[in-house]
Image 1 (tube, rainbow, N blue to C red):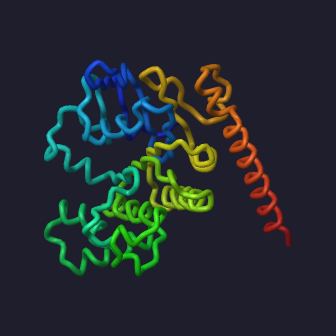
Image 2: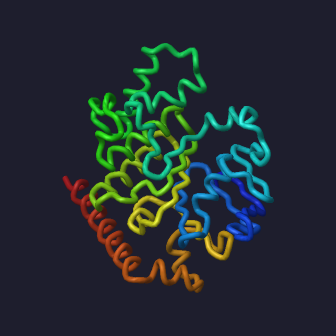
Length: 273
């Protein structure tokens, strides 16, 4: 039996002047899954995310998050829902004049202005630890961090409010393969240990194979297919075939198969007396 939906989008339409980005787009995100969202440039992946979290008012359609209607809601009316999600924007989107700890504290200060400085510091330290950063990173400014560390700092801030729902916009973009794989592992572990639902925009085929339960494909102004990658491979849409069955897609599939095989062997060896 499928898990209930945390996000439900129906008939979403977004236009910028004469440019139609989305037209009658439907999408469901199930509780507890990592949903990967892919599509070519200009298909509106980030616009879709921004519409869901209220930064983009659509021209038409209905969006429900935690069964609350979001379209047309004023910011103060959506406060209770906003507390239940965290967002990692592209590049981390950190405040350059604040330290990592101060960045993590920004949403806490907004929603819980009565928290003491000691409480804020303790929460920031814990979230920084959760994100995989060393403790000393708390006092550094974004300009003093590597690209991968900035992503993790942005993730620490996204986790500040103990969210149930996490939005990640191209979290592995610009990272080397090792850094990207480490971030994927971190995302999967956080999802399992914290019970998160993850809405993940990515171009990274390795990420899709490694951690996504389902993948939604944006093309032709809507979601043209959604499901496990194995199901998508059976569709005949030209973009899907080129994306998943091209050279990079085949390499990602081989790499995933090899990792799965090695994992099975390791478990068998560990089970020997």
